[in-house]
Length: 308
Image (cartoon, rainbow, N blue to C red):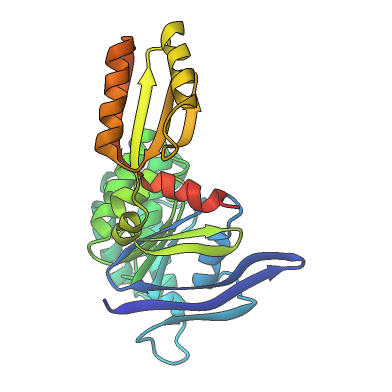
């Protein structure tokens, strides 16, 4: 894997607050990387330093292959969490404007803008004022402006957090297409999106990098067997569940429970499932759902960010 971006000992202090604490990671060329973490973990501060909007207190950010003294913003396309637009401009005018800001000629900006309006699915709205755009349309326009100068790294800060389910799905599909053409780094709270799109993950906690690497490797290294049980909610079944949870084997680790269900980590999935099915049949328990599988990225995330 060829490295595109190398970050070393990156730190940011705001007066008495240490927002990002000595983090380091690499992003490979052509990879899609998800930056994860709870609110206040330092994700947005990290992104702002990478994109040149914040000056690090210390540490280095280096694009491999960049000319000496070249502005790294030439290599970056950026879509902030809440992008701002000039409402009196049309979508086409806005892309021509941003293209010229990135150093393209007026002609090249116009051609590239038309191409991207079509690409993101809003070519029919190109002549309309942005003030009349929906949230999903604005997010698509934001993606177009981030791509106008053909960046080597596309950085997206919570790209779907403000969208309804339909708009979210549309933008996620666009990002899935774009990641085949350029390197992508995006922050998100939606772990399903990370699992669906990314090759690598970076999980931050309290300004530090808690875990990083290829998603498949991290998932395999942390994979545990899970039993998930949900009952129909009658009193008899709930009483049985409460009693059963008190007498489960010592190698069962209950990770969540309620009056009508539980999720449990087990050592031997086959043996645990058979024992549970025997109990359910013997006591005639009314089961709404029984799932067997493995821990998810959400389980890993919660384990990492809640560890003492």
